Image (cartoon, rainbow, N blue to C red; front, side, top):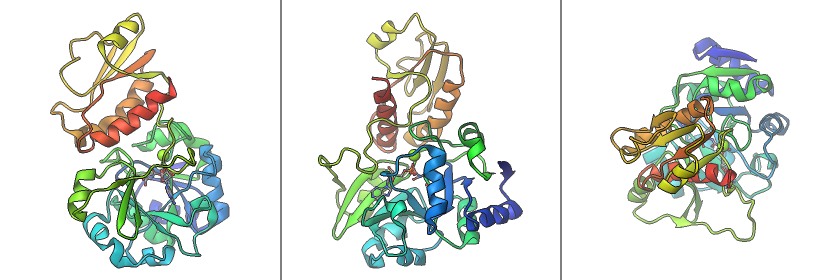
Length: 322
Ligand code: TXA
Ligand code: MG
């Protein structure tokens, strides 16, 4: 594995690794991605192996220009125009009908493909230089904390990747919001780094919820995920008392618990700003994971703006330890 500062030369070298069927971890504005040539099934298979990710969980294809949508999807660009004009590049993933060029391993056999144009300049330059859509999940071991720095990637996947491009800390800090587009309707599959309020105001209509009772393993709907290596619970007075003899790491959002006695305290935002809190979420969870504590107690936060994505990640982490 090579850990390289992202620049013209290292991006070129990384693009060659992608073309040759290897794995490159690279920065995006949401989280770091673990990338491979998205049109090459053998290269893509290495992603699943490196992460320990089940094959039923499909991957996002990352593009660098709008015309690539027509390469990998059969959708009429007009159908997604409002969203692509407003939010591409950015923290939004669209699930649309796939074209024949997309290998089954990418979509886990689904007739749809997930695509996103990241905003991070290193990601865009890498995709452009590789000349193919880059398949990339978050660059963490399956079920673990998502990485927002190159060091986070190295600590989980060091021996599994050919190159890690270091492009600094991801500014958004939580994964993209995923929307499935079917004709006139828009379904929210995962809350993320673009707020639902912003999407609904551009669409002029509400996002629908996707109920998937038939298939509990359906994409994006896993109940356990994003878990630190130490137990995490939601913080309230009762849980605090139950844990008071342990070394506690507090992950806070408001002043409410500031005076409580934690061994380590991390404050996601001092102004109750959900954008700032999202940017700090995984970074601070990684810091807590590396502190000498027994348990993390996380304050629940209002599900507004990016609060919705933050609570989605925290609930899945907490579920892991229930
Ligand atoms: O911000 C992000 O989205 C990051 C960066 C690297 O771009 N990527 C990311 O990928 O979060 P991953 O693999 O960790 O999460 C992708 C989610 C999964 O929950 C997967 O099930 C869902 O997208 N997904 C992919 N293809 C799908 C499809 N055809 N239909 C429904 N869901 C899909
Ligand atoms: Mg992930």
